[in-house]
Amino acid sequence: MDDIGRPPLDDYQLADQVHHRLRRAHQRASAIFLDTIGDAQLTPTQWAALATLHGEGALSQNQLGRMTYMDPATTQGVILRLVDRGLVERSPDPMDRRRTSVQLTRVGRAMVEELTHKATIAHERTLEPLSPDERAHFLDLLHRLM
Image 1 (tube, rainbow, N blue to C red):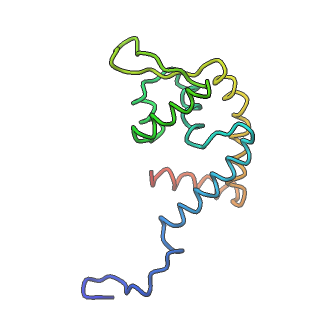
Image 2: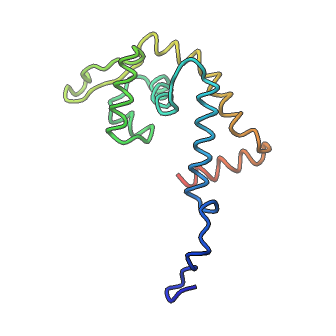
Image 3: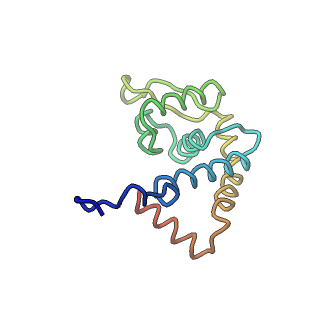
């Protein structure tokens, strides 16, 4: 320990750091998700937007961003890409014309309904190395960190 109580720098092991382990776990989970979803060519972030809109109905861009934990720039980019693919549509919010409302198109709704089973499989594949008790505990711990 140094004068301030910090461990010496030569004891620092990146592989032992939580941010590094979470990043690696995220990379693995994203790769499994992309592999399982297949030809849909959706990122996990785009899927989060589609699944949220499917469950909640039309939302303002701001609401969608908050519910999916995306910053405003990311939310707008995701929405624009989904609009370009014909999966969501934007329109003035009927309650407040200053806001933009986002909702699934018929094609977007059908895609979510078709891919929900695959998303569930991706979830299971990601947690496969863990026992059922470990899965529940791991998800609880992640929830506490959020």
